[in-house]
Image (cartoon, rainbow, N blue to C red):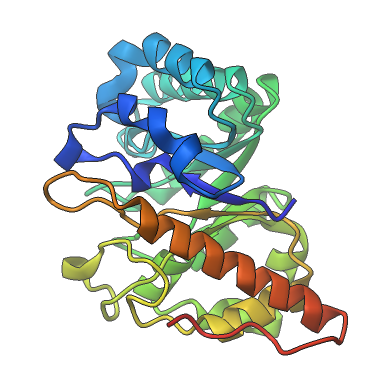
Length: 286
């Protein structure tokens, strides 16, 4: 695998009216291997139109980012509604050929305030995902009470085989990126981390004012040790670039994404060379 995917959320957001029709130009403009489709809460009334459109333009969707409100509903004890919406997300994902789901198990202002409620719903979520042939992964998203690694470990205590999506920006936000290089977390790489979001971060510890998702080289993350860790772990999953690529006027900057795809492709090529003893390790972004 090791495909380079583009998040549709990097292209579509509030500044351009969350207009899913803008995806029509993706295949001609972007030099990636496929897409991770990010579904927004305002799109449910148009869900059928959206999936028909995506299928019509032939957009290769390999991963699906579940609508983020599902985690909030779980924390609010709205399990039935969470199950309904999660099922719909799985149905859409499977219909477009995606086989991996990225989930914010906790989310929003309520975040992980009631994390036990969220974790208690995992068996239900796994059952629904399996029914649709979807591999479920939990992302290390922003926490308000604990931290993502602690929450991951709590999930894994009950579900040791749970899939995880590691987001570099989210890890840096909680000052946890280096923790994933430590030997005590080798098991996560060997068994659980099945997808990676590559993004940069320009803020400090839990700096909510600087949560913008940046392209590598625009923030403070040193990616050299990160790629060394991937190489040591022989990570073979896909990567998604989520870096915001539209300005406040909503205009998409396609070239920014293509530069990031080229940079990531270079890092993976260097990774392969180093693994074979033919060249240097991954270089830092810049």
